[in-house]
Structure formats: C-alpha cells, structure tokens
Figure (tube, rainbow, N blue to C red):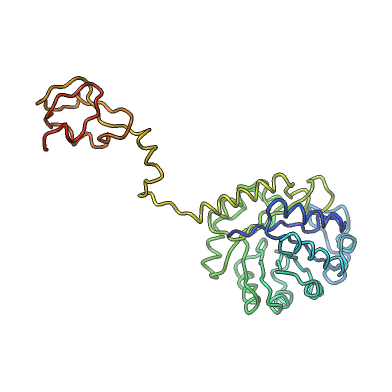
Length: 330
C-alpha cells in the first residue's frame, strides 16, 4: 500500500482558514496524510540567518513567527485531519516544536532534509516512539547512517529519497538511490518529490517506494516559500490516481503462461493454417499449398512446418482450415 502525503508545509501563509481548507482539499484529492511544518522562530533560527535563494521576500525569522499557529490551533488542525480520515503529520524544526506536537497528538513525524544532522532533535523524536519519515535531500551516506542510528529504538523509520532542489530537474531525482537505501538499512523507503509533474513519483513507486510526498497548494501564484513549486488540486488528484494505478500494477503480477484472459482474443486475432487452393485427396502438401488466415481457432499458424510433406486423406477446398483429421499421420 502506497502512502501519499500531501505536503502543506507553510503554504497556508499563516492563515488558519487556509490551513483547514488545504486539509479538506488534500483529503478530497485522495491523500492518506497531510504534513505541516511546525516552526517556533525563537527556538530554531537566529534573526540574521540567511534565506534560501527561492525565498527572499521577507526575513525568515519574521516569516516563521508570522505564520506560526497556537497550540489550540494545532489541536484543531489535528482534529480536522481525524475528521476527514487523513493522518496529521508535521516536521518539527526545534526541540520545543517536538514538545508542542506531542501535546497536539501528532500521528507521525517527518524529519526535513535540513534537520538530518540535528541529532539532538532526532533523538527527541525517537523518544516519542512515533513513526518517522526521514528525508535525505542534502545529506550523504555518512550523515544518513548517523540519522538512522539516532532514530533506532523509536517508532518505525521510513527513509525518503529526496533532492533539495526547487524544482528538482530530472537528472537530480536519483531514482537509483531508492534501491540502495532499501539494501543499506532494510527499512521501508519512499520518495519526497520536488519535481514538476508526476513522472518521478510514478517511477519511484514502480521501483518500490512505499511512501510518496508532494507539495500541494491552492495556486502556484500564492505567496510563500513552497507555493511556486507545489501542485494545484486538479493535478494533485490526477497524481494520486496515477500512484494508485501503479500500486495496483505492482500488487498484481502477471503470469505470462496464463493465457486464459486472451482465449477469445486469440481466436479473433491469430491465424490458422488454411488451404491456399482446392487440393485433392492424396496430395502431399508443400509451402505453396498453405495460407494463413483468421480466425485462430484451427491448426495454429505457428505449426505450419508440421503440415509440410504430409498427405491429405480427403479433398479440401480453398480457404478451408486444415485439421489433423485432414492429414495422414506424420
């Protein structure tokens, strides 16, 4: 079963109403979970910390403070998720944020790429015993090994292949890493998708990803750090439907030796061996005596060599399907 996480992040821009509506939209699109970001500005960043290149319209400290929710609001968002049948997830960016989310009753944690090396945070998350999704966008194997080790002893860990590029170009997706992660740790693996479109996530699921995360927004024209690279509701719905289809394909392996589903089609589309012209009893068949025509319910065309050199035991007409009863024993 593929778990689809709709990444709301901070695309709500501090509007509690927008956050509630985004939960509703994600649920309507078929997501299994929604994921927020829990920022407490004073606990996670210095006031002069630089902003990423893709977001420089507002000091990050001010942005985190302005878009933060109160404990009561977080509880109401978690309740909205429960009411709509989706799991409430969030990425904490400080020890204090973990403590807040524990009060809220978060269902699972997501470790964002920038927190992979924050081992005190990871150990605090592990101590909760909750499931954890570990992103990997800007870490090497050594850092990821340390992160996985720090999370051991807690809840189930799922490691997500991710590339911290917004948007992520095809050449940096790293589909090969999905299998390498599974082999390295023996843990469930998934894919955090920063690409445009559904192709990368579809390929990831085909390769065994059990979790896929993708940003969702009302409109890519919204203000904020994530909206420009997120997916709007109509496309997100199609995205989920595509992943479900791939999931169904993987869950139903096909036996190529089982031709039962094609029995009727084989009769319609395949060819039988027929007489190319009127032929008399006693005639020894050569290549020029044979033709191959629909339907495929007679002697199969693939057996044409079995017919060559055999003698007819009765007259046959042109276009008559040949059968073993028409032929002397080989």
